[in-house]
Image (tube, rainbow, N blue to C red; front, side, top):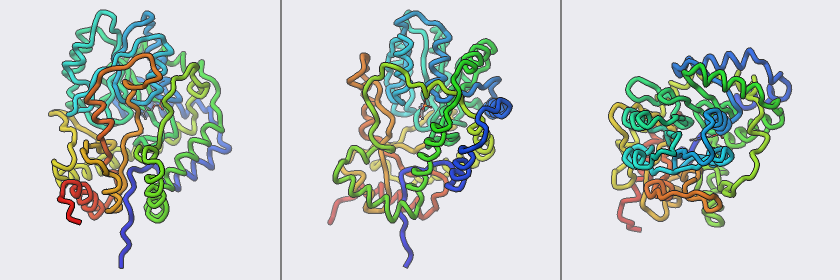
Length: 416
Ligand SMILES: *Cc1c(COP(=O)(O)O)cnc(C)c1O
């Protein structure tokens, strides 16, 4: 008899062995070797075909400095995605700017072009394009709206590393591109915010902000590596099948909301002060880790994209509604998300040994504790009905068949 291993919702893009190696290093190696950090910045810029790269500890930190540097007047409007991490909203508010949320286009999960154009007024100064789940929108349409209105363009390509429109990588269309090298991303250096730009002026301003950051804290780095180790162990196929999967089933009965999102419930209250951790230097160990990962990203991307293509072919359109995408785009599908209108998705999937989850990003346009909200029905729909279809590298054809079968079961007549 062969054992059918359960399929976890997602993975960490490091092996456990690598995590343990980097944990060991983090205990004693030097963390402030400028040469290594410069080497990584240069290599990442080259990988992106951008002129410059400056490494910050978080994507939110990079966005904070990129926008602060523009010295927009108080209350200037910044167009933001309705779904992203809360830290980005926090830094915009710290800069005393006004977030304006524009709804997504269900086909691309980025701004609806018409709604984007309509939301611009004389007080609008910048826009943050965010490529959710590795889908690329029509960049020529979006960029021409931004440029004709003189907006400062920030691209958050944390979920879309290597995505392209035409033959240009996302992250290089705007004034700055920001990548978060945090846990569960495809280039994960245990945290980091990599800012890329072709502007010498922005580059020199960012370098001087980077130089003012505080010394990094070794314990913070160790804690981040430990977090990845725990996630890595939890999503190991054996540990997951014999332990975590059953634990999730039990938890699902006790507290469904904590299980339904990929990494659990997130803090939703407003912050008054930005934590110190956001302003500590990116370390040379993280740079070294980044250098070791860059050469394999494309291979992992193409394995994942191949899985996605197979799954989209096998899963019935009545079961899962996938974003259609646009012509000219090369999507990387960091996570394959689709909308499902069914009440008990997780328990149905568990039947087949397939784990799924909804995104743990927040719908920042609907946070009750915050002063600004937005009407973004498409984002609300994605937030409430979007589930991940496991598609990461290393899944076998048998796994993919089982995943498709599980999702297809949602539209079959319940006979039993
Ligand atoms: C993961 C992620 C981030 C993370 O930002 P940090 O400030 O580095 O934690 C930012 N934006 C998006 C879209 C993300 O998915």
